[in-house]
Length: 462
Image (cartoon, rainbow, N blue to C red; front, side, top):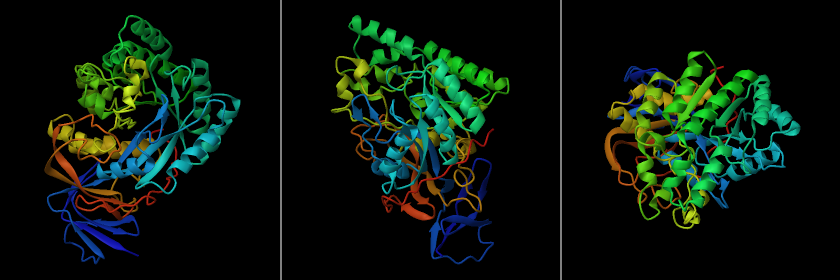
């Protein structure tokens, strides 16, 4: 049995801030005590003076090795989870994909094989259901029992992942019976395809037009429709990557009625805007994702939603494609630009900057990045907090260190940074995953295969 003692730091969780020593035994938090009050012996003592001791981040929305638009997301489970560790995230929940015409089981087994033996940190899966039929509906029950208890549906991408309202209703009805959580990409894809076709016919081919055709109202309309379908089905609903003020208003209205409706946003919507999509010389392609970046004035509504708890989670939707050779597939036709941004390494730091900027409190930072995603997806208190019995997924965070975000120094397997040149204060110093040091004072000491699959229970807010 190995024992590690973390001493001298300020422990920050979603509920508390206290100076405490943390004792770790066999990969779990064994005890916590007022500094110096216990004469604990340990094999290793880590000095956390002048640092925060926080739970490892839980990024509940990543896409490693995702096939999309004729190519694949550029981060593997190995490179992506290593980058996550560098950024203070110790658990990801990635999306396994059902291929239309094939079973959920086959899709999930494919993702198990991709991740097995390659991850630097712990991982779990959601299931993308892209072919709702009697067989896949039955399979959903078994997956919940297997610890894959959330199912993503798309109102966007006709011909790829799209489900119609009837299919969505059937999946929601199934989830209402088996305890699963339906996750929704809420954009009216049928209408968007019309606008894409019309824009290209007018010769509007640049990346900025990607944002113009995926209109705010079509996100709000789909969000509203998803909420009403969930009400009919008696099912909970989690809306992913909320980007617009009008969509937040739909979620707020539903929550005001006491409905089990939840919302997630992402750093790109909080820190970037259509100004980035409009960057010249095709540079805007770097910022093409869906839902798209919005005009800057939407950011205030997103921050407000995070403060009022109308939005509960900040995940990354990490889905990186290199500018050279991948984003460039859409030169001359914005609809062919692979959709997605890199961000798994930047989330914890950007949200700490948001604390310094006055958008959120320190505890709310931990709540939206660690505790709530863990509770939302059946991982708490194993993940998302620091408490006796919890996994020792712990980050020593230096709130005073300054850094400049850059592709030159990041660890994601992608040739640009969405936040290139941004100066922020706060940086990960040391990271433990189940008690094993994977980042040691800014040195990577982890290994592929340390990360284990985590069996999730159902949503803990229901």
